[in-house]
Length: 131
Image 1 (cartoon, rainbow, N blue to C red):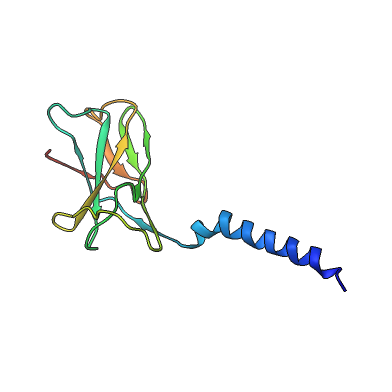
Image 2 (image 1 turned 45 degrees about the horizontal axis):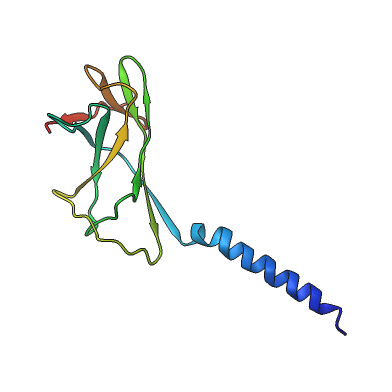
């Protein structure tokens, strides 16, 4: 009769471990967004930081919500898809957008200089907005 107790304990421990390990991923909504424009930080800003702009029509966003990667060559900086990760119940100050645009920084190995920034999905050259 008591043979089921160890199995119940093991089942409970496994279930709890799954919630701890997989739970945050299950409650995360991931959205992929195509970059639209880029800009530099401007005078006095870090020349190794390129800001990637994309359309964001939500009311606001959280610091660290967006990520993007870049692949650099001597002639181009290829900008990948912007990834937004929102966790269910995530609370934050809510950064605002201007003109339905949000921005995420990507760190370069070398300043943009005369290189062009291109979107990885279709090879389109991204406009360089003034700082």
